[in-house]
Length: 146
Image 1 (cartoon, rainbow, N blue to C red):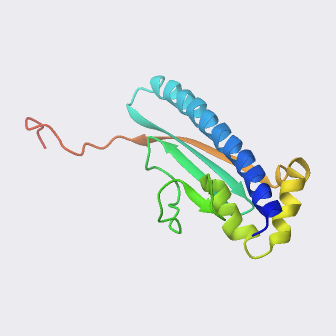
Image 2 (tube, one colour):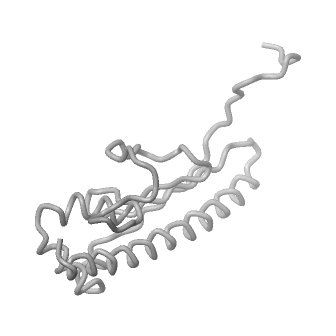
Image 3 (cartoon, rainbow, N blue to C red):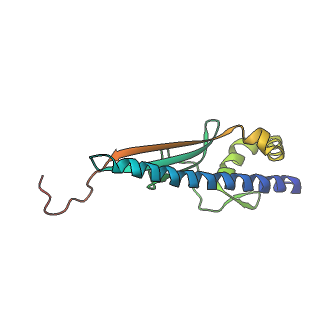
């Protein structure tokens, strides 16, 4: 891989890391909103917030509060952080974007990296979901009467 391509990967990684940080901030805000909503209900329910960074149909980054409530699992990632592209540590969304969009056509790397506001910002979206789920008793106390 050329030095120019490595520089483009680093530029895109900075952008994707900023988007992941934006997702995390929005996730926390939406969770706080759903917690407040839950307080107004007469029945106790579990508040859940989910955030997803998407490129077209591809989920680049997905997280939930509480952890483990994502709509779909990312099954093609089996390595721990940090992820690596061309020997450069990158965030998850950059890793997935590169492997799905740029790896097969390196021209895409240059197109997106040289015009992030015009080409990349317009095709990314952040989906968020808030919901209330029924609480289930996993380990009922000994004196719980069925």
